[in-house]
Length: 366
Image (cartoon, rainbow, N blue to C red):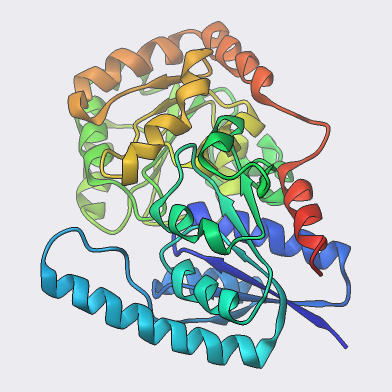
């Protein structure tokens, strides 16, 4: 009889792909398990997970409101509803263990697991713990962290350092396959731009502002820009107007192809993005999302920017001109790019992969 393992993840790429990495590793190690995944209401997450062949479930939940009293009442009602749904689901699938990746969707599930005496592993991807994981610490059997300095925020007897699981796909596509996929040239420098799985309006605007500064690089660069749903037509038109070779996407599922050709990356500083950049040795300009809880994206790149593996650029001063000042030296100097890439080696631990570490911790309860 197969045992069930339940993962609880948020609907952004930063949660989806570490969850997929763990799920794939667990099914590779334990042939007698069935993977179930609870995800929030965002349809893209469910679509990606179902395409990967996982059993996907949805429950009601809500992020903690910060303002109106009525919103707090709605929050409590949704948590209660999600708790009841979770109890029903857990009774049905009877998981041996639950691994929750810290999104607000985790709260009713983990509370139900506590009631039903089901082991729980919390995974904290960011340097600074999110509200859900801080609240749920009491209910966890283990708390896995991605940054060693995050250990101080959790009880010592529950804490284990694993790192952030990285999808194996990003290592499997070589540069030639990536160039063929995008119709790009090997001689050109490839700049990859993305603002998280939903895109970023502020990054998009700064990119439109930088395009005139790239006039002298028209024949030397090629760009992949993952821009989200807003202003796509305008962005495409501006690239054409400036005569730049670019591929524009609202969302790119096959990020491994983009990573395989990227020489420089401009992106947010989510924990998964940072982990992937370090694993792949890609120099970057990182613009932390200013409204992330406790400004955790700034902490995520603290070590990376300190050693010179990435350039930290605050959104408070973000502009096309400012971005040009930071990007153009990287475009001009291959040696500088190589130097930044080499500095990331200091942050690696190649002895055990993060996904293997987290799978080992999870396996203790299967």
